[in-house]
Amino acid sequence: MPEHLYATENADFEQLRSLGFSEIESRRLVYMRDHIIEQIEYREMLEERHRLGFIRWLIEHNRLER
Image 1 (tube, rainbow, N blue to C red):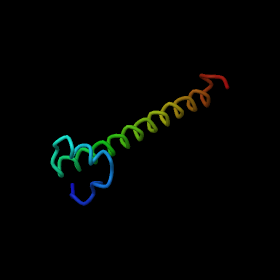
Image 2: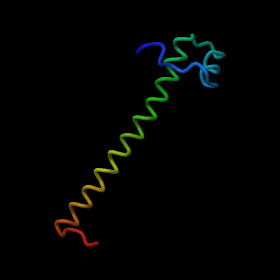
Image 3: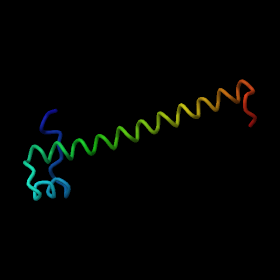
């Protein structure tokens, strides 16, 4: 992970620094938090897509009425 990708201009970074985390540790924690949230949202979208696809299949095969 290139170091320049991490955000250092936010309150979370400053709070981590004030708690004793190094600059690199703070950057990595902020980066991880931001990307974990994105991954969770993406997984939820995929799950919803799969559910809707299954419902569509049920309707198309007369297994579920509209």
